[in-house]
Image 1: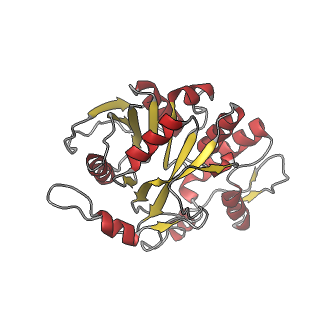
Image 2: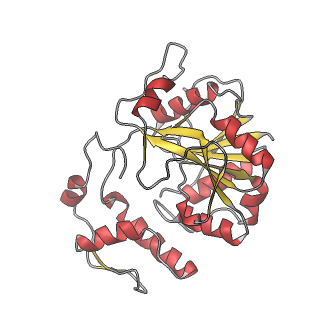
Length: 291
């Protein structure tokens, strides 16, 4: 099965370069890379590849994640779709593992992602990442299972989908009608997509062999820079599915006195927005790997 790797970019040039170096080092390279640019200019100072690279620009001043993912899938030339976040460096077997899994059965496959501290990435003169170093430094998120097999492991909870690394067949993406582009900015669109897939009868699997490492970037806990988008998108999810998503973040907003909300509530009451001082205080130390 031929495969397209899809990634979204806004202001992460260095991370994109490392992702492309990782794709160049694959035991089975992808048939193409589709880059959806959520910024005014396409950057061409990128590593050379022996697979096709397609560039598309995504309109919208907010962070149009759902629209960008849909456009990347629409422009992809192949049946196998590998969604890989620009912050990720793929391990050499990632494409091979996803390709094999997609050829064997339909479903959504979620690769293992390990989180890196700042300044973890080293590349040699040819641009190949030091994968042994990444393996030593990478850490599994505590909310994710530590898998002891490279075989697909069924996952019954569609809400486990995180958009950093996953793959599915184009026909299943279309069966779910893609991502809901009414979601703007950070949060909610991935969970909504997962529920749309589950409603369409798509099964979910973990796939440890499709490993990637998440490159460090500045983090906020709570994610106050995305306060407005999280509230708006959580409301949209609740209106569609009758339950809340992003409850952890909403709980932290409530504890800070920004909103009135509970898991049993019908709506979110915004009391105030975070101040500039609160946003700055929420920025995490560079040693913290995940929010």
